[in-house]
Length: 121
Image 1: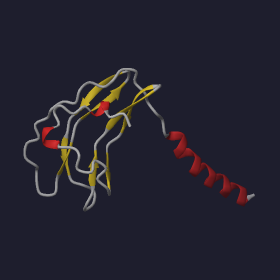
Image 2: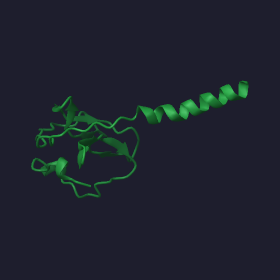
Image 3: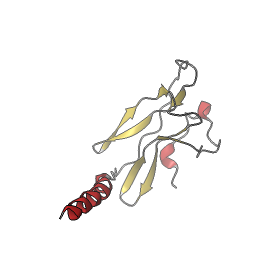
Image 4: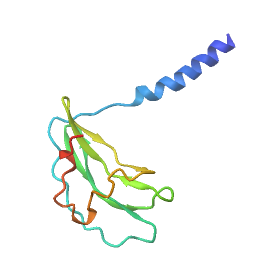
């Protein structure tokens, strides 16, 4: 009986996180990325985390960019972006990673004309 109870707990621990993942789709494309003046970094070791349009019901709200310290040495910020699917537009959250997935192709100084939501992967 005790073994069945432990087995049930292990199974629940594995299954619950997968149930918590919800995909949100919005029918209309996000607005163009806003140009933000960065200002000076608050100190050494800070990285700019650019702003983005976040889903807000059936609309979008702007989340301002900010200076942030990477969580570990060598971390790269992978910017949030939208992909278009049959169901609508889906946000892929920004996150810190060990690898630079932009491979140096983004010019962050001149990105006021860059629209992440046109990056259909």
